[in-house]
Every structure is written in C-alpha cells, then in structure tokens.
Image (cartoon, rainbow, N blue to C red; front, side, top):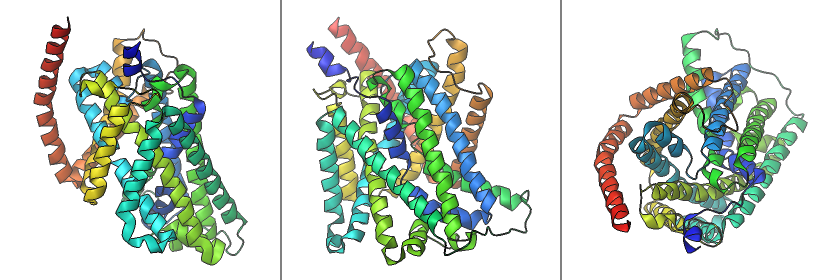
Length: 445
C-alpha cells in the first residue's frame, strides 16, 4: 500500500483541467506583442489573418497526433513516452531530457515577467523585482505541494479569468467607432519571394505564440478517463485559442491600420490607449498579469511530470517517483522549483531559451515520426482516438519540423554546437544509468 502511494499519480483530473491547461499555457503576452512585429513584416491585412489561421491549422494537426499518442500511451511526461516506445530507450532518454530542460526554464521566466508587470502597476516596488519573483515561485511551489487538486483549481480559475479579459478586450475593440476599418492595400504580388519569406518568418513567430497546445498530454496518467477526456480537451482548448488569436488580430486591425500596428513594440497597449484612453495601459497590464499567472501555474506542474516519468523509467533518481498524499510528484516538483530559484537569482538566462526552442523542435519531430512507426510496428495497440489525415498530416508535420530544425541550425550556430555536445555527452550518461539500474534490479532479486 505504501508503495502505491509512493509511485502512483492520482487520477483526479478531467476535461475542465485539460482545456484550462491548454488555454492557460498557450495564451500569454505573445498575442499582446507579436501582431505588431508580424504587421511590420507582412503589411497586408489578409496575409496577417492567413498567417494566424495557418498556425491554427498546424496546431489542429498537432492536436490530432497527440490525441492519438496520449490516449494510446496515457503516461506522465508526454512526448518522450511515445518516442521511447517507437525508437528505444536512448531516444526516449535524450528527448525526455530535452523536453525537461526546455520546460524547466519557463517557471523562472514567468516569475520574473510577472514581477516586472506588477512593478508597472506598483512602481514603489521597482527595486524588489527579484524578491517578488522568488516570492511567486515559493507561493506556487507551496500551492502545488498541497496537491494536484489545488493546482487544477488554480489552473481553471486563472484560465477562465484570462479568457474573460481577452473576450472583453475584443468586444471593446469592435465597439470602438473612432476609426473606420480600412485594410491597407499592398501593391506587391503575394507570390513575390520576399513576401513568401516574410510569411514564413511570421509563421515562426505565430507558432511561438501558439506554443503550449500539447500541454494536456503531460497529465494523461492523472486523467480520470484519458480515452475520452484528452481528445475533447485538446480539440476544445485548441479551437478556443485559435478563435481568440484570429479575432484578436481582426480587432487590433479594426482599431488601427496595418501601418500603425507595424511600428508598435507592444501593440495591445497602443490599441488599448486608443479604445480606453489614458487607462489603456493599466488595463493591458492587468490582462498581462493574469495571462502570465495562468502560464506560470501550468509550467509549475509540467516539468515535475516529465521528471517523474524519467525517474520511473530509470532515467533519473529513483526518489523522483515519490508522490505525496495530494497526488503531487513532490521530489520532482521541489527539484524543478530549485532550478527555477537559481535561474531567478542569476537573472539572465536568455541564451538557454534559444537552446530550449531548438530542443522542442527535435522532440516534436520525433513524436510525429513515432506516430508513423507505432502504426506500422504495433497496429494492434489500443487507439481510442486516431489522428486525422494520417499519414499525410504526419508527413507534413515531420517535414515542417525538419525545416524548422534547419532554420534554427542556420540562424543559431551556438545552440547547434551546444546541442551537439549535450547529445554526445548524453550517451555515456545513459549507459551509466542503464548499468546502475541493472545492478539495482539484480541486487533486489
């Protein structure tokens, strides 16, 4: 009985949490900033909207893939489980650690960003940014240490508030009648090479803003009915995010022309200043704070689940499988929070984010390839949900991942070298862990 408490996660989550985690970990400050940069690159109303729709289609294809994989193998930790099953233990070990490194950076970033926005609201706290960030980290660690239900309630609450804020802002934009909607005309042909390059650059930014759409899969093991709940929550959450993003861009372009958006570093603030007057900046800052709190809550939960899965498979310390009475993988939560604590104290770790984005592309590519391989090698595995458009959609996603990898490798040589070194060093570590696990199993027998 004690072993069951120690090594098993609690089945306590449902559709509501699944939708909330996807919405919460996707919608953030990106949608408040990115449209301005994209308007500067594309300078065409319909191209801008098309770019967000294409990004949405990418998400829907990805959701279909992950709905199949996570209901087929409903385990904590997400992608690396499917990659391990398809390509073996080393591939699982490597991509699992890639995924962990990428996700473990997020809590520190979001604690810092939240504290920066709070300082905008309360300037008297200007010298206390690091203290506020550490306070947020400790508060969220204690919340999640109390149990998975607490984290679930917080996720649903912050996601609902966030969506209401965004919907309210969108409605206010469309109710504003000071400027007539008049899309800018563009004389250049849509087929011109510079426009095509600009579209793909913009699409990369759009996909960064959509990131977080696969979050629900990390919690498949804790879902009360993963076969039904995960596909429902993934598709519902994805559609909510896509609608908000596309309509938000239409709302921005309703208030200001493309040329005005193109010069904006924080487009939502500029639009809010037009719609709400001098209170616009405060309103957007409040929306930004709640947006980031939802993401912070999600990313306090995700790294702990990945590390729990890695620990259970012998890819990390055995203590990492410890689960407390509330259903939280407590050891991996504390380890992940400690990493975030150190990163906040260091204060500057932007270079790690380039590395993390690189790693994410590798993990996604392997996950899409795993779907194809498992369909061929294990056709009889139970598949409560099947990916739509297979195999064409899977092939498109693999090719897209390869294209992103090549693009990153070309534009970020330092991260490419770092990943190459990490990969080379990972194999001896994997062999050492394998030998240790075999020895422990032999001693136990």
